[in-house]
Amino acid sequence: MTKKLRTIRRHLLAPEPRDEAGIAMVIAITLVLLMSLIPLAVWAQTVEQLPLARHDQDHEAALAAAEAGVDDYLNHLAQNNNYWQYSSTNLPPDNNKAFTQFVPVSGGSNNNESFRYNVTTTQTPATGIVYLTSTGLSRNVMRTVRVGLRRQGFLDFLWLTDYEIMDPALTGANVSKCKFHVWEWNTSGTPGFFNGYGPSDPSSSGCVAVFWNTQAVLNGPVHSNDALYMCGNPTFNGNTDTYYNTPTSKNLANSTQFGGPKAVANPLNCTNNPTFARNNDPASGSLLAFPPANTSIRQQADYQANSTVTGCLYTGPTTITLNSNSTMS
Image (cartoon, rainbow, N blue to C red; front, side):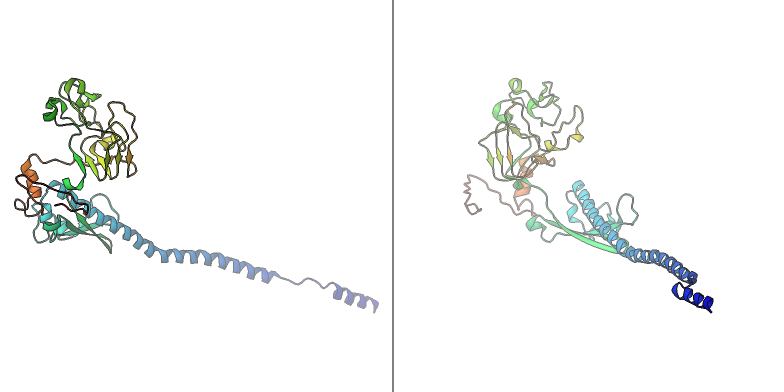
């Protein structure tokens, strides 16, 4: 009897452990299930994002295609000054299909980008502005840009020069030695004073450069096909650019010698500290062709000679008074 009581007591105080092998199996299966579901959820989320990412990519590609259309039209316009007169109803001689249908963007592409454009010239005779609408297409996404294009002219600048030297007809200098831009190789036989580039040395040729000094203040945009000669601290309160400031990577030995952005000409080794309204001026500008004769200028000013302009031609003694309210009498 005593032995039985001891056995019962021992079992009450320290029961034997139960078999938990089934619980471990449940936990293992649960973990495996979770490890399978998480990648599936990530994969499903990724798949759902693919159309959005694809659309965003096409959205940007379509914009780039539209801008390529603008560049394409500008290229045609640069080769033919009258290209603005052509449209989908009046095709140009080169049969440019971009006026009537989408054409592929040049170069390699994975999205088959294309563009088409049309022009509006109803206001061109009055304003000189051609409005170009270019539409880019990438897969099923289209985007459109609209720009106004106008030819640069003499009236766009407060100061505009082809050569930054005084006219040899006024100074008596030899034209053949002076008619060189700073970036041009001097072939006159008398080396230019920029290591063979530019006009011949003034001491031997009489070529006189226009130097900008401390007293000079220009309140408007400036452009020159030449370089700006500095000798002092002039102030330029408008955007300033020159063709001389073309990047030096385009230099050619004994052909062209550009200064790059911010460069000025200083053959006298003056102390210079010019002030510019825009950072990094003088900037790189285009080579603007000047009209060969006064008759060409008349074509840009006299509406009777050119119906696309709205200028005025004055003949005989004329007095022009510039008024304070930006008009003239």
